[in-house]
Length: 411
Image (cartoon, rainbow, N blue to C red; front, side, top):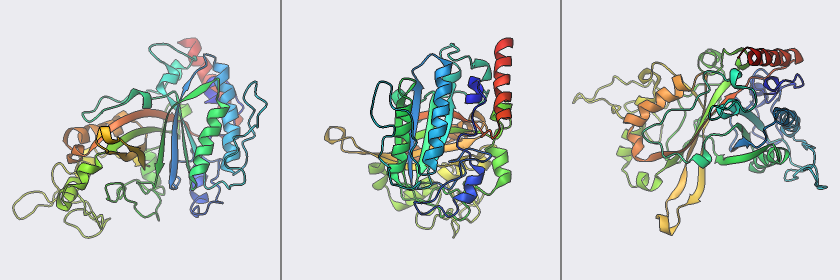
């Protein structure tokens, strides 16, 4: 981000390749995820049980304000990921403490902070707000409307995003709170989403967790040690300043759990296409048995129904496209007596990919049209952000800054 804004003073913003090794034993709260590496942390890093996602809107009109904030946020992120005080500046005109203080004395708890840039930061309503329009990557586009969308504008979109994940829920809250405090006068929180109990295993040794519907979620997810799949489906190749980065798609998917809970076990399993207890594909015995979409019953009907979720989400049904899922469950209260007392709970879907329109949009359009699960879910929030790679040298930032200046002069 600092490179785009025209400066060379940044060592890195939440990288990740080194984090995989560093977090292989990150089950205790004293673990520290390496900050510097090839990619941002929080992408292939094994997901800890607590997450807080924040989308921010810029309130300033000055590019220099954003540049200064990126410096401040970077310093704070480095400190907090090490379990230290961010020691940020006090709020202007305030003589109060320079740190919010919730986690004083607490360890790092495997904290990762992942930063993203929204399309509106480059251009909004045709306006080049910060002189970045020519640097907007072609893949950073709004998603099309889907049949099962009931999106709430107040908690969709955003200029910037931060995903905080850790072994301690207070640590993730503190990280977002502190970044929001440091951003006063430059950015403000647009919306927040808290998550718990990750629902998509990505570590090679990580067991597949269950979602709030009781099914194992993530058996076919890309693994963090599958370099070939990551290079093909996750890491971006162009433009040059995004090389090694990715795009994050987030969707808040509310589950109609009351309706789901009254359906039979057989109906649930046919809706998903897997056995509830074992996680095995229908017709198979083990969770990781091959998903055989051609298998037929004696009466000629497919073992896995045509509208089963796993069939429609499988790569073979979507031009062999895949995405790296990193979702969490959420529970945000209930509708209350006037609203029927229904739980406001479900899946905060998080996915990384090279091209959101080619990958996520293609897969989700297929699901939105035909998925039997649509009877039980509704999408209420959506956003897409560009997740920059880490730049480990001053020269790299100068090069990105130079590209930005050149593009601006020739546009």
